Image (cartoon, rainbow, N blue to C red; front, side, top):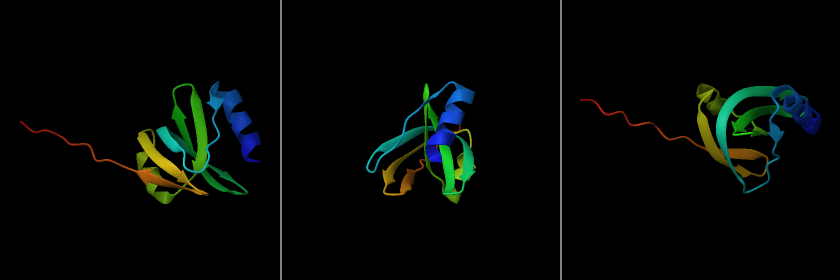
Length: 88
């Protein structure tokens, strides 16, 4: 099911699907979430590729923003850094 969905997204977006593995770093722009029978996934786009990784509620506030994390079994440990603004 995940592979079929990835193939459909690749066809629609002209991006290459890049599967993820345990211990792998994931980074890119969070584009959307996808609900499948096997669970909900986040589409992370980077350059000409995208990955589908397990979704968690915390990522929704970062829609269309850069995100990064590390795959840990069937989950992602997300790393969010706050931007620092300088006031003059």
